[in-house]
Image 1 (cartoon, rainbow, N blue to C red):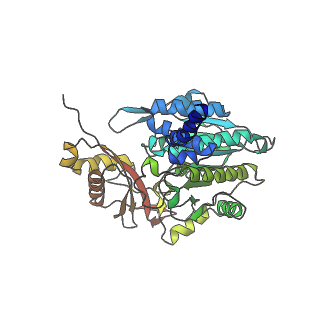
Image 2 (image 1 turned 180 degrees about the vertical axis):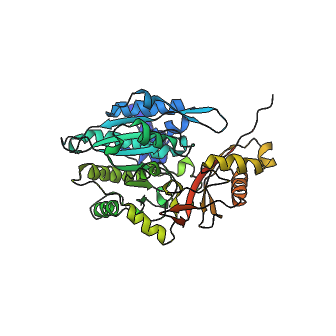
Image 3 (image 1 turned 60 degrees about the vertical axis):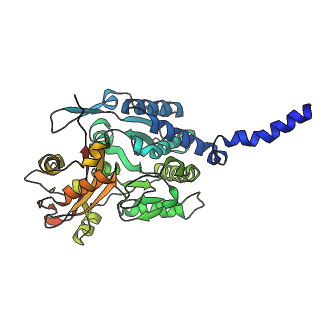
Length: 404
């Protein structure tokens, strides 16, 4: 009888294990942590719950948390007159080198459920870097930035207002749009020669994953706030140009993301331990601009203007929301949300290359593109007196009114 029961237990065990999911059985502990963190982030019912989760995991990992009032909340006044309140969550792992510990590497991620995997990579990095803190010459700040829907307000606020040692930041590493690693692993540095050399040097060693250096920005993200301050920045992602949607959760390859996380950890440790910080060379940008390459909106000496205003929100209020038509089928089905649209204002001020970066639904995506493509001419941006092609990303919001 005992043998029979044992046999039954041995036969049933594999079937019981399979209930965990096929992928989980073949993932290491690091991949499982990333999977679990991503699931918890995606399930957060509100921005505050999400921020609390990020805060609790970072505290467990070991960084010294930034608990000052500037980090608990910040406000953005909208054109409608109301104030939207957001929050950053940040911690710091101190470097050991007396001469370099007051220099910083910032590792950041957009704090949004749509960036669940990018945030999960940030949390896994906090565990790994805390464990290896004895190898870090510079200090490393780990930051989850709120307010991404307001043109990356959280990262802008962090580097321009909250972080008093902003002038001591030597480099920034951005983590965004990690979805299906089989589509590729990419590093975008805005063609910074020093960062390119660091990526290539690490790629030449034995690594679990190797990113492809790309010259086209995969998507606008938090690195732009740091680049605008003259801080060398690298954007790690699995997205390519024109990325507009993320795969279903069960398509995410967490084992591969774990290998990419290990690479990023090694890269951050190289940055934090380098004798010389990477240089930021604005002349390199000027050379690219002269040859007709596209300049980020905020990097223009004179920003493009729409009907006399250089505030992108004016374009939304005075054009987009005036002429936008809410698709009737979307109204009937209760479809709403924010569509992130990227477009170029060329040297003549014409709006071109309109594309959806983060879609909501084909009906809303198409309408957002239509109304921006129909835009009247802008006054083009300038760099060193020259008219340039400039690139801008905006969220177009479709919101249904509640019936009384």
